[in-house]
Image (tube, rainbow, N blue to C red):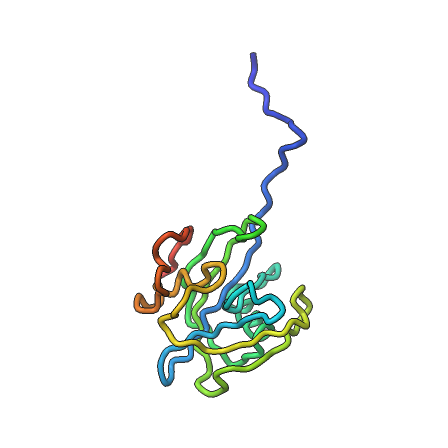
Length: 174
C-alpha cells in the first residue's frame, strides 16, 4: 500500500516567524546604563527595551534605529553591532518570532528619564511610554526575557537569575 500524506483540514501550515529587532541602547557615562521604558497603560507589561517589526526590505540596523526613535523619541544613537538572533515565540500568543538583538551607543547628552508618545503608523501609535536609563547590571530581569543577551555584550551585565531557568534559543553573532 503506497504512503499517503494526511490531508486533514484541521492541520494548517505553521505561521512564518515575525521578523523583529530589539535594541540594547547603552549610555556609557558616567557609568553604563540601558535604555528601557514602561507603558503606564499596561503596567503588567513591565520594563522593556525598544523593539518591533522589520519592514519588508528593511535591514535590521535601519529597523532598530527607527524603532528606538518611534518608541522613545531618542535620535542620534549609533548601531555598534548585532549581538544575537533569538527564536523564542511570543510569550502570550505563541506566535513564532525571529528577533535580532543589536547593541547601540546612546548620545552622551540628554535626560535620564522622559515621557514619549509613540510616532509612526504601527499599532502602538499614540501610546505613552516612560523612558529611562537604568544602571547596569540590571537589578531585575526585563519583560519577555529581553535582557537574555546582555551577557553577550558584557558578562557583568546579566541580571540576577537571568542565566538560569529561561530558554535560550539564540545564535550568538560574535
